[in-house]
Image (cartoon, rainbow over all chains, first blue to last red; front, side, top):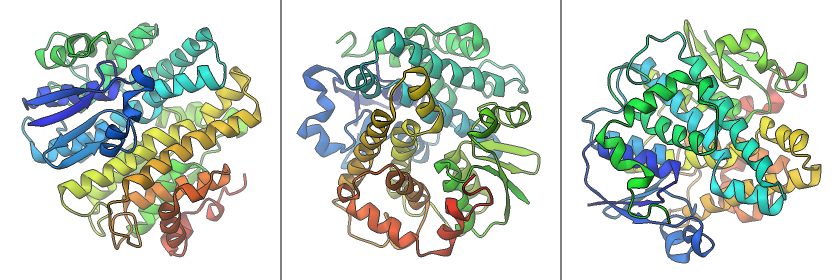
Length: 215
Length: 215
């Protein structure tokens, strides 16, 4: 069975959990606590599996793979149905660009290690850290919202079915809400996320539904 | 002809220039200055093309695409030869994970907007900003180097030909050198980058070879 090294509140872990659920694949969660014991991801045992010391990590037999978007591509190649990256070459390109915006422009600035460095090394206080989070998240989501203006409205970001865009979006909206961002700047994205919240694949992937929730 | 909106010293633009050169595709560079005039990427004209206000942006006829890794995937789908993502599913997954580590874990913390926020909004002085850069770049590259330990040595990261890994690596090593990182922590990656520097596709993509160089 697939094993997913995951932390309940990690956005990147949450993305992969949604994808596995949408594909109907069985997997076992192995919790890695990113704060406790100075961060279990820095333990020798975990570092041997993943030198990047980050979650998620997917283990498929003797093959270990890190990086959430590389994992999504790998799952798509091995288990093409249901397709989470649908459409022609241009549509797929747009979906990938949407995902990369969250993956490379927003999420990296909200992650645990960065917030720790801001607080402990740069002595940035809690209020300024909260403003930093809201700045990058709101800027990124607002620009994604603007980029969708020309597209017809639909239940999901790119049409009638959930896919990679929602795997990335839902954890990002979860983080935005947690950090007090103004959802009025991205109403359409918020509507998609709210719709996803009614679907079992998303419900089972939610941080609060994880074995390590609240830890 | 393809148009690439690019800034000479932008890592993400540099990646796409290398890929276009390796594929032997003709393209026109449209410079976007990320600092001058408060950042030309924030102009109304550019924002209409790319609401994210970032470079690079590839324009192929009536189709505009942002995000460097989405652009690499798009070029690979339309112009499969020479392949820049070679190998079986597992090798491709490893290459994608390598690229995402640079794209999502390293580069976002060194980009112009983040450094500006650190300096202007958080009043982080130049020395502390330099330490921030070295921290994230060295941590990321050292972990990538560690992840390659089990692999046979080769002229390029994943074997005998240059591909996506080098498109991402070479601009990251360029930034690491510029920001004074300790190359002794990633000797193998430095060797690959030095080898790439001898190849015309990489030479023509170099920041100093751009029409907007030094601006």
